[in-house]
Image (cartoon, rainbow, N blue to C red; front, side):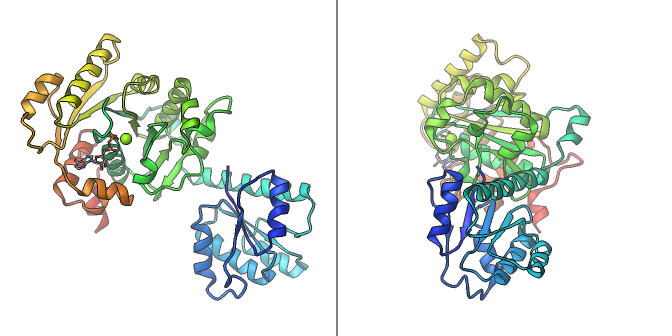
Length: 398
Ligand SMILES: Nc1ncnc2c1ncn2[C@@H]1O[C@H](COP(=O)(O)OP(=O)(O)O)[C@@H](O)[C@H]1O
Ligand SMILES: [Mg+2]
């Protein structure tokens, strides 16, 4: 649902909107300085920083000030719909329109009227946000399908998510707007935290829809810094449980019709959902660390996938995580036990958990460290740096 925010000190108005929208949660945001309107630009930043898609200003704010705030919001986030709550004369109406205000409504409006105004505003935001996304039609015309890269490890803590977010970020830097990331750890996914996202939607929002068509998929994606598009896991495990293999299959199909690279993070174990993703994969990245249990677990999973004949036609890659751990087994031991040769070795580094906790991917925050360089080597497997369109994220940032 598109979040609605009421910048007002009127509890009564909040209650009217709540009743009109049959919504129980909090809607109101108020700052004592709001009416004084000292620094409207930072105020607009604060309001849009809440992640709201619709922002109503007033009652309790002078209409002129409300219009000014709306103009500042329009300047930084034109896709957000603003509503001025108050009585406006003809002249103010005109300046409201010029400020990009979507609608004006009286604080005494009926429930029906309020519902109409807020629904229309939310709809406009959804459409505007969808239009910000890359052109689906262009990709469809080329009739090409993006490369689906699924990350698999039966053991939790292997480094799947650390790898998924960093790989997706590097691919997005090298191919802006052409990389997508799907969090299929549907119960406990942490991509949202690792990338500091504030998603409005998740894959679970497609549960009630008859099909996950490109328009709906666009609405469900969360955009990260204009480059990377993420289909997040729901924040409630109960909703995650409800996501079916069919939905996962159509989500991956939809993503690969829009993006050249689709990185898929999965949960521990080998669930039906993960199998559905593997079925759609062009590439599978197996990852494990140097522990005997991780190595054995991975061997079992690969054998099971062979038995199910699910590895045919798929490129397989193998990443050894925490490869510098001195635990009495060597890379050669691991390769022999798993039956794959190691493509990239990722060293242990405290920067990995730190960057995940802070929500700043390592390849951006510390690109020169050995672990970041190894993560970029993983990206080289899919998008070699000497390819014509490849750009080194480090070079781009200088
Ligand atoms: N190379 C590494 N060095 C140090 N810590 C790591 C490394 N790779 C992963 N971690 C940490 O280990 C934990 C598990 O990693 P995560 O990517 O969440 O695994 P998974 O998604 O497979 O459960 C996280 O706290 C992560 O920061
Ligand atoms: Mg994970």
